[in-house]
Image (cartoon, rainbow, N blue to C red; front, top):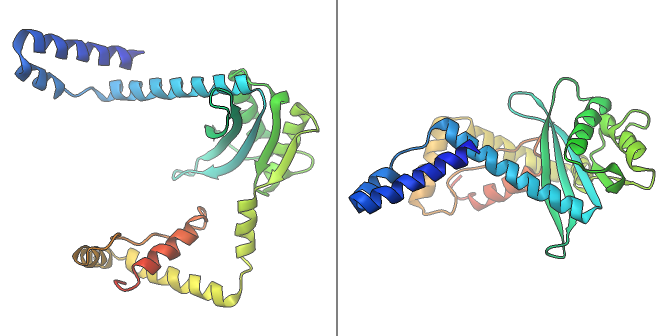
Length: 245
């Protein structure tokens, strides 16, 4: 609440300055910047409020489904991404939302992932028996028969819980076996992009050329094996800038 209090104080000072000293004082008061700690506190307050609203909607909906993915950030920290699907009774509509991004302290085994996830669910007052579905990729730590995350969730939620393999991940696995002629197109495209993007001079030259030709875009996109959904966007951008390239 510290950030909210500081913002209220600032608004009060602006109103007082306008009333006593005129609009010139009001404009000067608006230029006073909040400290980093205050801004951080405001962001945390807003995040906490948003989470509380989401949790209340989940409790009102009762039934929910989870989509889980274990990944790493740029510092190689283990992260469990938790997405949620539920019925919003206030709007009578099915909603999807980000539930949480939880840091995994050490290992990324099924047991440790479940411990982090279970702690989050219990702390927010949610109940496993209301979880009717879980979607993951095919990694062993998530889908292992004996100690995988899905198995542990079924132990808590009941065997009626529906588990499924993410169909977008299916598409990614399928694309690994695509026809050689199509794979050659992607391979050559990535080489072209890397030749430009790995050179600061080439990147600046392409940007200047695109600016002179009034293009919709001024940069190419990197292809990332981790964020494999980028593949289509990479090829689309390269095609749109094919003349400039």
